[in-house]
Length: 609
Image 1 (tube, rainbow, N blue to C red):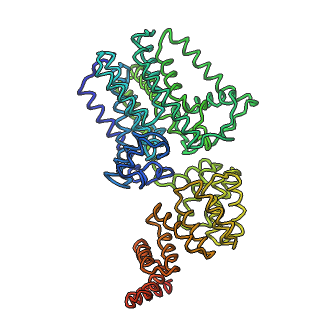
Image 2 (cartoon, rainbow, N blue to C red):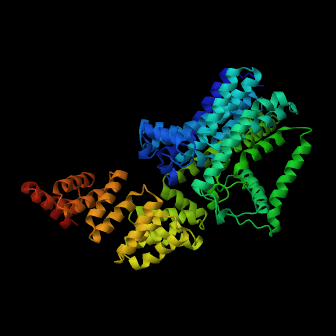
Image 3 (cartoon, helix red, strand yellow):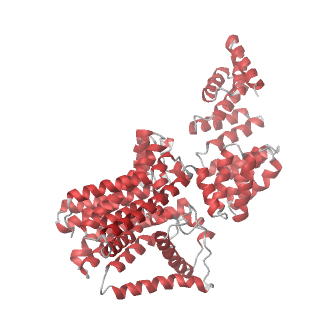
């Protein structure tokens, strides 16, 4: 099954692939965290051994149930913390490893141009999204396991030993637990067997893969449930009929094929298409795909490779063709990282075709052509990688190419608000709501921006609408509670803080605000448990430490209050009011000298520009 390659040549080709990837992705090493990286780089509450246990055995502890991926992130954070250089370097090396394994696999299958195909995969800019985005380690790592499992299984076919089969199955299991798209591997192996022999034998080609098909089916069902139940892949954005999903699948197929053939205008978030069966032009996509398959089926009597490549490409794309819901469909039906794995058979076919074509050219012409193609792809990859430098660059670049991307407007507004640029954030949130009027987070964030600018009357309608649009949105209840409290409607505010905590019992800010609301209405003893819970949930909250101290001081519990004022100042040494409150508490316990020092510091900070 696997033809023995020359170890020496394989080694040199692998080195070339690694060097090419490192050079092309050099700009990625200076990139930072972007968008949802915080949902993948291990959270503080998961960084212990008990956190690792939760990653494996608590559904919902991580954004998706990919325990091998999140265990890898857990180990990486343990080794290098929040070093973005290390995360990026690892992802680049994983991509290079995947390309090297791809070359070895094709070489073993005696596919012409095996290493050319590997270099096309290594340098093609459509892979940038998977390599330069830390979260997409799920793609690079799962593909390494996928290709390693394929190599191990083909060796098992050559030498049917239980040990070899178990190794291949273990690698396939690791791939599934890293990203479920690898569930297509057993079907891909069946296609490979058909391509090699022109027919299939049940006992030889299919029966040993039956356990793999079962694992793949279970994994797919679990992931589909997570996408719907926990991530939110349901609702109006996913209300597509069977006909619409068929139209979408045909368009998605041609879109991805086109991006591989001509990667001239890659975008982080592509425009979201309107799928309309009444438009005759949209029927051309699925009809064209079916015509292509029919033509390749007819041609397979002469050459099976093109049909095999098409089946492998379409099969690997099946999870994102539109027949099942995946959350990113809210923004767009296509994304570059969706075809990272699916692109492999296309590169294999291209490598074989270009190799056969080059055989008709002079040696120098073939070499110049290969260098030109690979150099051009590498240059495009270098340029594309620069767009992933940081979140601001990413979303500004997205808006330059897709001005109607409401998600980019929304995320850019969040970034600007985080930098304290609330006026600038307003225009982007308003643009997001203009493009997507029923997006509750944008309504909430717009209201919050108005709150930060002390424009409470303007904030209230947006926060009320956010709660109306999404009644189970804990953050919106908390924000609305703040606005109501600042409008002297504290009783109503308390109900919304309580609702936020009910919806999310781990919501530290809602507990803090609930306690503040009680304290403002004179219910000091009732406020204390909420401050205590807020600190249990977030011990590093300056506001919780300071406010809890004030609640304790109001009850004359000076010694306990001093502890929390000191902790607030440890976390924020220039917090003027904490210095003042600590000074007042210290006086109550007779520590006049230290009280005077903190009082002077409070006065200095107040006078500072």
